[in-house]
Length: 72
Ligand code: 9UX
Image 1 (spheres, protein in one colour):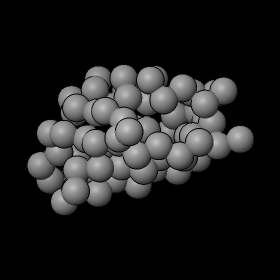
Image 2: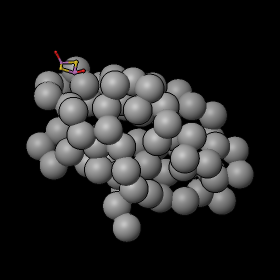
Image 3: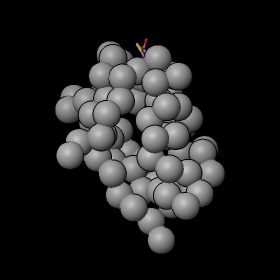
Image 4: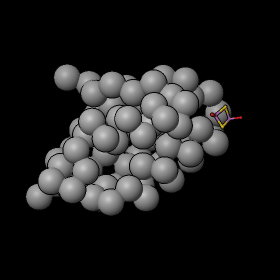
């Protein structure tokens, strides 16, 4: 089963940042789809939490040099 999470992502300043996040996260196991919006600084990710928990996705975004937090 997939979950959908909305994230606030900070530190993205150009379209390549969007591609970086979409590529890195999109290649993680259990991530079905991610779409990142530069102008709103947000992302929507569909993932299988039994494979990759959201905390790990957020951690990888941070390791890539951006800020990430779930929108509650
Ligand atoms: Mo654009 Mo983003 O030059 O880390 S790739 S700022």
